[in-house]
Length: 180
Image (cartoon, rainbow, N blue to C red; front, side):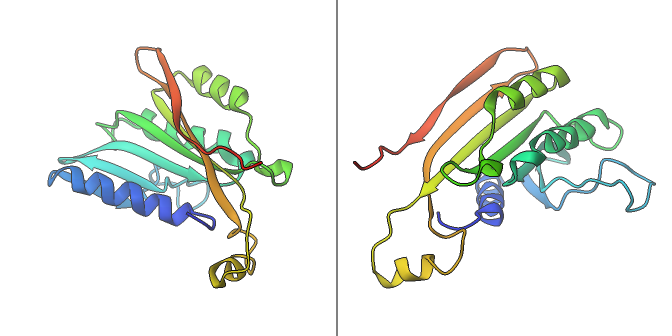
């Protein structure tokens, strides 16, 4: 997938969730966990994956590394609001990174994991790292050069899960070998 991928990842997660069961639904642009405060100070998760008549997973998708901790705080707010969001089992943060781009795109796994553990919430991270693609001179390659997001291709997908039992599970789903 080329480009920013933010909306594409949200669409993919939503459609895959809905395909799994006729009992599943998605709230796209989740209502804020803060009720009655007007728009000031409200945070809205990207989507809520629902099961039956309850929210089940709060999802944040983020492309800006400096906002990762803020997105974890957003997930915490949903999990803590059991009055309005009773049923949420865990949060999911999908992090999109350009690995050989500017430093502002490079995440620090250690800091993000430590912060999540300090919040003591069930949460899963999916890190989709992208690297600059070797572009040729095809019509598609020339189009990719026209936008700063397009010349990036997925190079690895990793996951890290901190469960309600405080156990950690982590692994790799994709690792492209660099051409030499």
